[in-house]
Image (cartoon, rainbow, N blue to C red):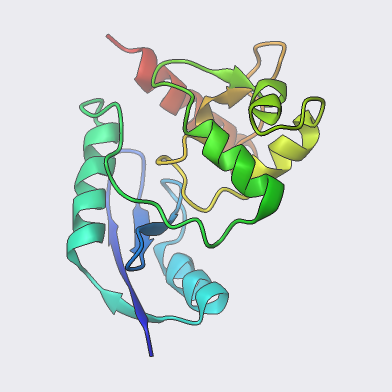
Length: 170
């Protein structure tokens, strides 16, 4: 049976977990999420067997820590997009083009994905982002400049604002 590697680690924003296939990072949860649920989800969605640790997840973990400490602006790891399809994948791929320290609206990212006027659908795609942080969905905000939702209600919205604030710190 094929495997995926995974790791979990603590950050100042809370615990983070990562999973990788031979293609790249397939899953990165939001800080503060349950690391064990990530492993269970990847098993269920890919049919792969888990293996703790590995060069790719260890390198990605170092980059996540550096990012959350404000020392990294751009991730340099391969991504495995297999947990997304169709329009959702296009939205997430378009989101990777939003530079560090900048934001785009849901409507703008929908247009980048080839579907102008599909802001709500883009929001749904972003809410299901399996590769958080590396696919910087926190950079996508409402057209009125308000933060908008983020992974799990008020706590998620607070995390989104902290990530945005991190990126504008000088």
